[in-house]
Image (cartoon, rainbow, N blue to C red; front, side):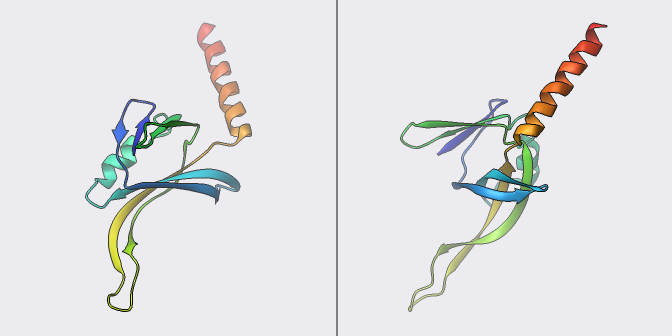
Length: 127
């Protein structure tokens, strides 16, 4: 599975999850990109910018592409242990450090406000 951001950056996360999450006073659809701990948190912080996340294309291993628009609100960026093998009667659970980047979708009102601000800025530049 690969993701391609609006600026053309391609990344290969270990997994991608998603669902509703309460972020900045709103319930928003959120995408969680999970990377190995060997990735640079600074690089991931830079590449998952507001502008780069206007369009996120997720390409499945089967070739299917899913395009997600306006996931521009950073919900989380952190490193935490993730259970990769559950505990059994013979062995304890196995954990690995993973980096999670969570991006939440703008609300309709935030999108409309951004469009009005862009139009007003364009009108100011013409004068």
